[in-house]
Length: 204
Image (cartoon, rainbow, N blue to C red; front, side, top):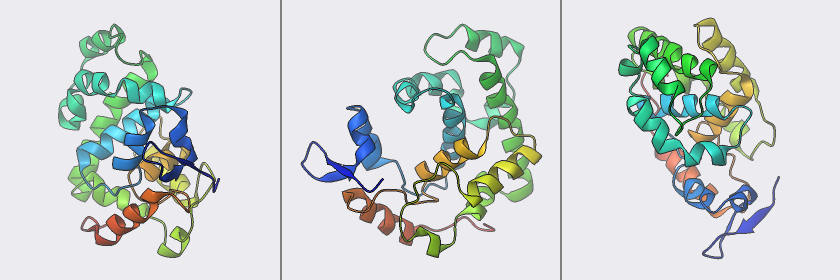
């Protein structure tokens, strides 16, 4: 997992960038940089759940369609979706038309609203599961971690759906709770710099 490939600028990056042309921009600008914005955190959890059984390339290509279909993942709005919205989404060819996953997004929006009422923000809850700094010394190659298992378990206790440990681990990688850019990747140092200056949410 320590291998890199050369990007379009001839600098080394995580090997998975070579899987699709659009991955390099996502890798360089988003993946691994810490996020505390509730809307973005909710969006990513939803998109990771839609990815289950599919490729991230499929989801990334449809991301703008997902945003349009789910009101930019503003969970206060999604929480008010009705059966009419479910029927609409099942007819939307621009997204993944999986009834269980669509219903899970609506359910999870309601659970997210409850979390905000209880903890102040979704970010405050999620960032409690950031691994200890000593575990961040080098990237992990596993598809789960003790923290992703714990976060998955606790979300499920709160009624969230489609948030298994693997889905949650991918979410944690993408949202910067873990720096899994490989050693030698030009972006790894940028992410570490961003993580050092990142202000963890209050009460996290």
